[in-house]
Length: 512
Image 1 (tube, rainbow, N blue to C red):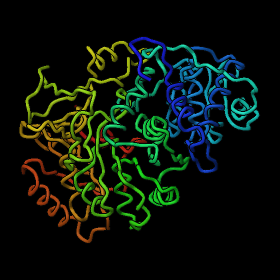
Image 2 (cartoon, rainbow, N blue to C red):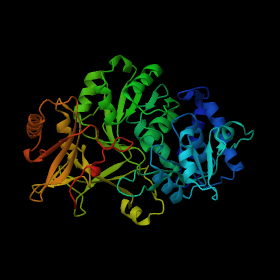
Image 3 (cartoon, helix red, strand yellow):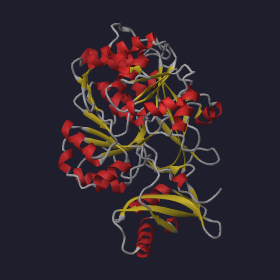
Image 4 (cartoon, rainbow, N blue to C red):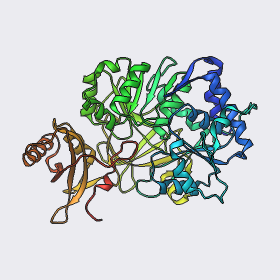
């Protein structure tokens, strides 16, 4: 549905109605236990929307969703939007302090949770407040199944919202401070499908989608809900944590054609020795969350003969806004701006950077968040004159291809020149003994900044000192020599966010 600015538009109505018109009996979602057609989904969305009014959840109230990926998730998410209520999708793996902060910060009217989280939320929500707990079959909660299935009334028409009204929130990861409630408009949801999924991935209603990234992430929400619904395709939902075995089984059993993962998962799949025959239904793979090293792209392509389209997205922009394309892939690079988006690089003095100059990435496009909730100062810094500041350092070549250099606060100056931790990590990961690597700044005995590497090896080394020498020579042969790590630490795991991004700040050992 295309509308003029500020005209009546409801994103949930748009996504579901196009399928009631064209594909009512098509399977929309399949989870671990069940499946649902578009027509059944339509009915349950309207029933749930009506039920929210019966428990005094009204227009513009905020409701937190902290649920595993299953068929109830799209019913709840779209049902709330249909009713003019604002869903807030949050990570199911967070510590209690983050849940407490988000409940208080958002002033949520209700929390809809999966069964295994009930005890955690019971301890956070005091009996003397008005927050409603909604789940399945627990005596201390309103029964979610009743809200979806037992009401005999429908909210036949969606609320008359505008395209620029707030439709839903996502919370940022909060890796460098408190999580930020990121406000997205109705028009943003479908814009990601129209500009990226249809024009870059060439999606059709014959595709079967599977996203290892969960629905509570901006990346997963597009992959597993918005994109398939925009064309009447089928989406496979998995509540479990993705492992090489579970992911490959899902792809084989359901003949998945589009797979969405993160670099860490691609590395794990390649290292697991799983047969390539399990993936024969795939026509395309997508990677985001963190830049995909060229080495991983090449190994995956050699393994399957299937391309991986790497790209960059963010919570603030809702999905991928710079991407490689099927016909134009540069391994190790993020690609070019997606149709409908503009990108620019701003250097330290605030001017637009030239080609081949490392600078901070800013982006403009139709899916940008409107602001952060209750954080006017941070909003004014991030969202300015239609441009969104990403906090990522990039370099653009003469062909307009953007390559990731690291988070702005991860960059280091060595010998007076910027060094990207990502390029050093990519060089290390191309060594046959290295599975994963993270590079951070560290100070030497002269208080000068130099790179330090944390490395996960494929096999236990016989001689670590000789291996360090070999890794140093390997990096020097691929990059400008001064970029090599001065220190190595061999570890069993790296600290990461739930989306697979390396938390380099946890590895830094120097004090600013």
